[in-house]
Length: 230
Image (cartoon, rainbow, N blue to C red; front, side, top):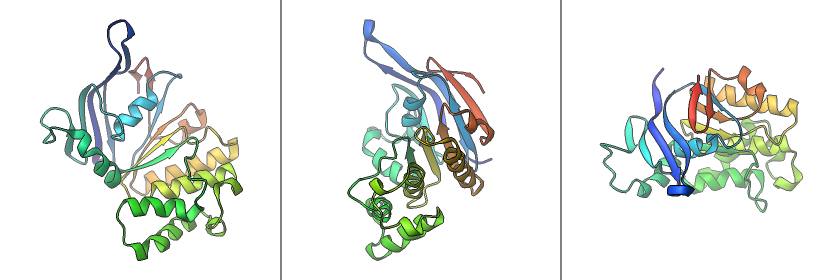
């Protein structure tokens, strides 16, 4: 399996001295194209912090982050100020799915997806048609013009998945994607994420949901910021 995302010795520390908190502690992971990785652990174990570092949202205190063979953060990285390049790295390589959906309430389903395409500098004439294709891919053709307030939780998460695929990023990161969904809808969303990995995307899910264990290729258990077992 070809690696697409590599973390080496990742540590994230907040505060100093008596207020020092180690959120992530010396984590090393490699995620391959076409792999679905599940990160599990109790609340406060560092899962979301780790996912944010994977997605180049947070800088680690120590360690290396390599995306598609390019050292973005850490030793031997060509970037003296990696924070300057992180926005472009996120736009090119990552799609994000959140437990609270994070849709813009004043935009329709298709406009929420189209906004990401605009940020990725897609041709203005193609944005609407590409956004519609993504919406249709997740069975929401009849909901394209609906606002989030008029959609069910499952429909909103499908829009969020469509948005995550805008621009065809190779890596999808999902933070508790089933937390606000009923059991049946949660399984459907996990099935959609599994389908993305089978289509060649690297999919990383942070979740407490035991149903996710049946869909993952690999499970990593995090506790007190450390990997306890895989």
